[in-house]
Length: 160
Figure 1 (tube, rainbow, N blue to C red):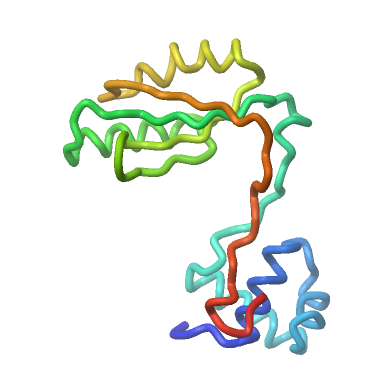
Figure 2 (figure 1 turned 120 degrees about the horizontal axis):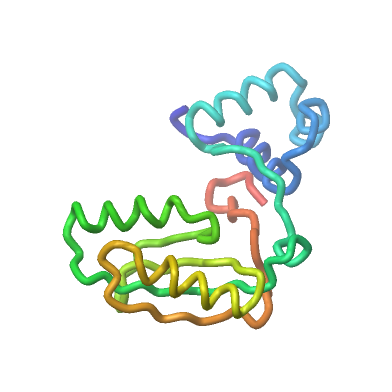
């Protein structure tokens, strides 16, 4: 795929809102017949625009009441050591997001836990024992204003 047209952008927008749409429903919403819509969705998947489909779960309903933002400072920022740290972070289910950041710190993590006690135990037993960790700084979410939002598509033209 070289460029996205208005139908592709519309498909992306609709699927971000409801990935459970049937192909027929999606086709109707974007103004295509079923077969071309299906081909476009497959092309968007193959080109890497659509990375996957998943259910969005309310973390509080499954007993994960704490959302922490953890900045990890690395002792050294060299290739091999940083890659080892990245791989270790990828293996931790409680880390739901991790970004390599600029400014102070090396990584910014979003971590979920049942409560403050379980987070504290997790931080001591897991995060502080990651390879190359020099320091850790934590902030806690006091309430979500917006989470799990769809990506803006208006810059692509024909989007929402």
